[in-house]
Length: 65
Image 1 (cartoon, one colour):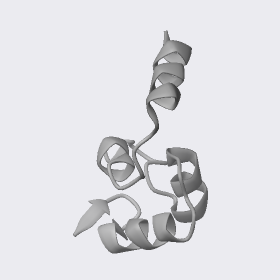
Image 2 (cartoon, helix red, strand yellow; image 1 turned 135 degrees about the vertical axis):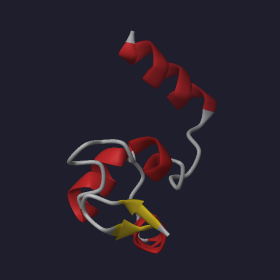
Image 3 (spheres, rainbow, N blue to C red; image 1 turned 180 degrees about the vertical axis):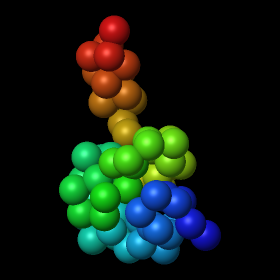
Image 4 (cartoon, one colour; image 1 turned 120 degrees about the vertical axis):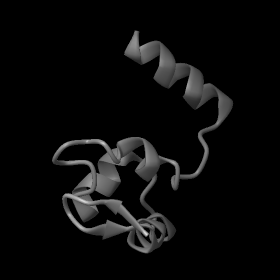
């Protein structure tokens, strides 16, 4: 399934990149180009990333405020 239509990036490509060590949207953007045009796919692309630990989630949410 295509996740990023702008750059023709599939879920398989994202899964392979995550399996190779990508652990953030920034990693996916650098390695694949996903979510670098319109950004509509960013939420779906990040859903393939490993879940963050509770402390990391709290830190990330706090950093965005």
